[in-house]
Length: 501
Image (tube, rainbow, N blue to C red; front, top):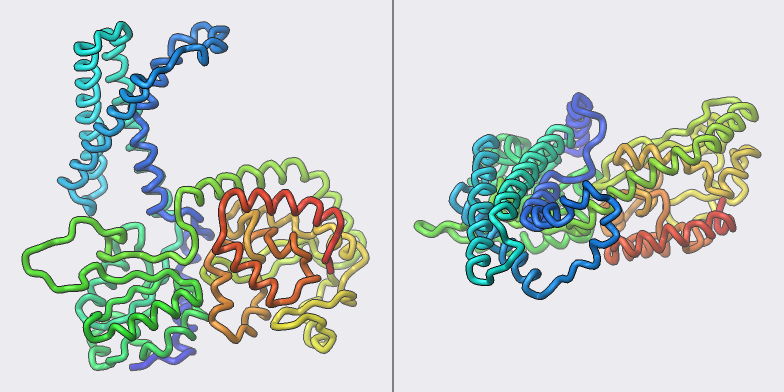
């Protein structure tokens, strides 16, 4: 049974309703990214133990901290640290291979703590051997005992901290929405795993397959043939497409699905079990729960953690520093025009998920209701709506817009995880629904921002095509350094009021 567009929309509405029962906003950090950060943090235990031993005696005499940098370091010291960290890493590598990656959580934590103790013993043995061979005067029994105790404590703390962070991310994050291409054994197995297990658990929107003969056996809706993939991805907030078609008979179909996902900016995954095997088994899978490889269209690495940390820190500081100004603006808006202080509107965010954006109201209270009556005055090219002398803007609102002060409440959107400080601007439902090309949707593959390349390149003075080109350029060339340069360029752009409407 093929699902209609109305049916898909109804499913999304029901899915969104069920998601409201969970915490309102998802953690912007994926659990698998937190796990990578935890692995990196855990590997640093020997280094942190040595550093703590180095600065430990100085805590009693703070005035000696100035002499810390005077301690001579040799290549031998560096080599010892590298050998210890390599030994630590190898112990955990063997531990993970022996225990497997899908162990129950308690068993996994127990295994990791056992790995900490085993690795500590190995590192201590290496230091003991180094004392015998090198006759290093600093490697005394007391220092070796201190290293073993601190290394064990730091390693266990890393394991427990990682487990807590992962659990918080798992239970607070919004379940992902998947679309499976395929309808046979591998597709059904992926459905069962995605529904219930691991960091990638979530809801499956349905199945697409050129062959509808297996539709009646599917555990979820059959949405039609592969030719519906692009339209579904354009208008549904799908987080990932899982490709479960056999490559030997559907190579061109899989290739076309990949092109569609890349054009729209949706992550996709395909099964690692490309060939049927009887005796051999794969040992590792980047997407553990469904045995597949995930391809991202936007950056997904440790630097995203840094971006989110900067967002939270800077947004919190700005809210504290600018609270008197924001209070003054709120009073000015309330006293000079009737209506609420804040303007809220649904916008499209990452992966085309809707959220409510906050701004100081700069127009009359019924501005959205008046939209139809002034559509003919639109001066912008493409699907966007811009009027240089919009009659709906209030006198205070015009000043707020010129200085971009109406955007300040979006700092709350940054803290809640709907937005970032830097990124493509979130677009209204009215504008996005007028998109005619799937490639325009790729701008929603990252978190939207308060400022971006468009804002520092002329804002309303640029046409729609340039706006989209700058957004895609930002996505493809993103780095922490680019965010920093955009933030610096935002200050003179705001002060000059260049391109403001």
